[in-house]
Image 1 (cartoon, rainbow, N blue to C red):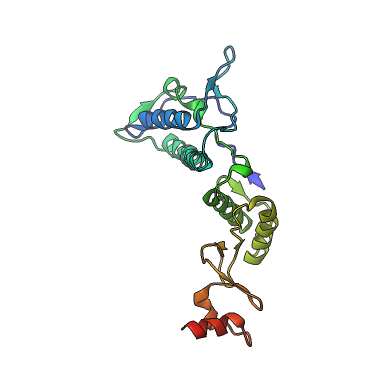
Image 2 (tube, rainbow, N blue to C red):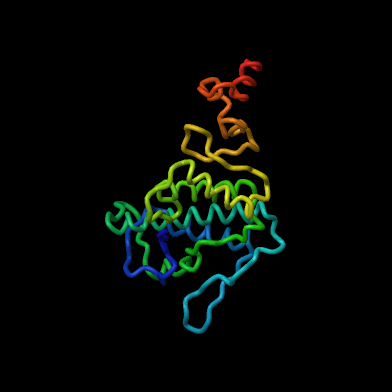
Length: 222
């Protein structure tokens, strides 16, 4: 596995770049909102850069933490890509983002982590979907698979290894036969056939196995 570092080893902008109007205000507002929501505190030791004090987000509801962290990490990764684009192609009729401006929010360009026991149902599914995409050879959240991509069934098997430790919501993620995405039996994403394995209900009528229980059931309900 390879992992993008994003801003982890960066202390700021080296040069002024032209960015879309409102970029500085947008980033300042975002960082301040994250700090308010997650009760993050800015720390600075002597002349070192400002950073966020570590937090376990105690006293904040899991739903609030997961939603805020998911949104923050999305903003950070998107902003990283945008800076690269703006650095190569300055924005016409934009605004200058100076190194001094960037220092006002640079401490917040760090990806936040949540202990798995705090993961909500949606957050767990999003993490597993991201890992599934990586194992299938698709870049996701800065992660890339350095080995030959796994097949859908192989990637699903790895996810099922994880779920005994991480799936506190009993989502039972799997890949329906003939598809290339995770689905959950919890919300009807697939049905389990004792003969054929995970199948989407709409696919059951096309199953070619003899005496498939799911086919028989689907015909009864048709």
